[in-house]
View 1: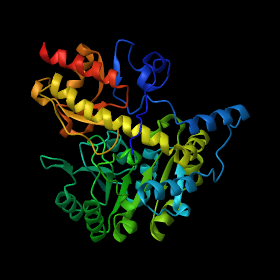
View 2: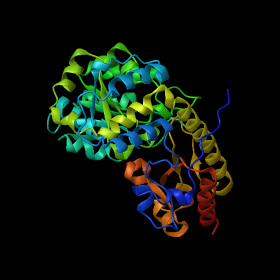
View 3: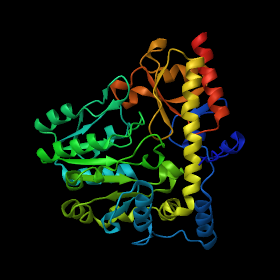
View 4: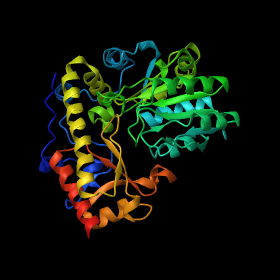
Length: 386
């Protein structure tokens, strides 16, 4: 069944927003760096937040704002994943959830594996938990990226205590296979280690790929794993502050349940209210329309790069609205986004911030109007041709 793609808001309306995407640079710059999308909110979210404002419902978040049940129902409906709402606890955002879990499953100085190129805050949240980053880069097979399971096993055998997983992966958009996740769980179990899985981009997995929740990958994954997620990326709710920590075993549930009340108390009320609306079946049609728009844009970006920037290397992502583009062949240095910003007036995310593997790369946010994407790539193409 065909779905009409969601339409982005007009550029003049977007420039009235006060968020990071629209206030970091001047009006001459096309912003495609930070992970905010340009679509209108899902109607159910708008209605719920408008009702809260009308009521003056701006107080503290209650112990059970409904987000646990809403996510469990969503996970079953969209992923076929059976989540026990009693094993879900909220906090302020995904990175805070990661830090709080790492603080309880590692000791100061323990090493935590990350898989670069990877979301830059991973390099900050590990030391925030008094642990040390251990880099085991993704393997580039020539067709796709995958976890370097042998490298992860070697690091765990050498004493690393945890793996911080990005699933689906940011910035490559890779949806890790069930087989690789199950093997990762087996390796972690063999070394008495844990896996903390950031699954914030999961709702945006495209129809030609499959998202496998880490906790559902195998029985061992349920024993060694923690998942942290949020509605914030798929539904553009980052400023409202609500994330979920999910477990699937008695021991991991105890770890999260024993966290101080303050960890959950930080949850934003508007984030919880918006999350309930986002995860409701009422918002499914909106999400499907967003996915249709993003599917068209990821393919459009591939065509535009081939036409305007033929030296670029880009693989269409499995999930999300972020594109990982290799511009090394253009000779624009380790951080080509700086030249593109300065001379083409297009703001992209700096590749080296994702790790050494990001040198020569940029991350492009294509969660926008197709015409804006066309203009941005045309500007970059003109720079490449000059």
